[in-house]
Amino acid sequence: MKAQEMIIEIIKRLKKEYPEPKTVLNYKTPFELLVATILSAQTTDTHVNKVTESLFKKYKSMKDFADAKLETLQKDVSSVNFYRNKAKNIQAAARMLIERFNSKIPKTMDELTALPGVARKTANIIIFNVYGINEGIAVDTHVKRVAYRLGLTENEDPAKIEADLMTITQQKDWGNLSHILIFHGRKICRAKKPKHEECVLYDICPSRDI
Ligand code: SF4
Image 1 (cartoon, rainbow, N blue to C red):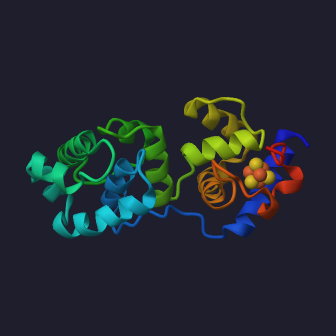
Image 2 (spheres, protein in one colour):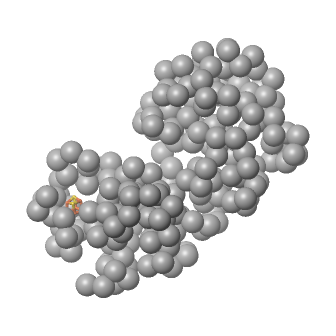
Image 3 (cartoon, protein in one colour):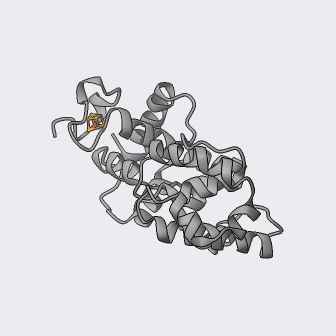
């Protein structure tokens, strides 16, 4: 099967398995999604949701994050990896959004990646989940692993993986593709002991014997 035919089949099957592909991070506002996404690097979404449950009760607005004492904010997120830097970036992003973006979350890749702590992956998540725009494909550890096992990429660098996936898919599928691969990676195609026998892609997967 050619890569393009393969990806069409993969998307069809995984969409059926995961009909509501969206981030599992909890948030009520676009800014809360930005905070949760920054916190989620190298940390599980489940843990981030535990942290943000109390965090978003204490810091109710962008301004609350901007005006907070940095040491206090760091303490409030101290159970996540790299919390010092993440808290610093969240505060700096809040201040920049207030000063330069009229307290609104921008829609474009260039504007979003200008914010502290926001790289392409985070920007893709925000643009798709907040605005429904298919700007690119967020590549996290699950997307990286599952795409490689399915033979959709041979690269290890997220930017190159994203480019590979964008080449073989239609733009309308970009945002969803990231989510369905993440769901599949979490549930079935796990890093350790992937559940090949339960996988809906078993018959077309080149890695079914690993
Ligand atoms: S068959 Fe196995 S390696 Fe291939 S996608 Fe499914 S779980 Fe992953």
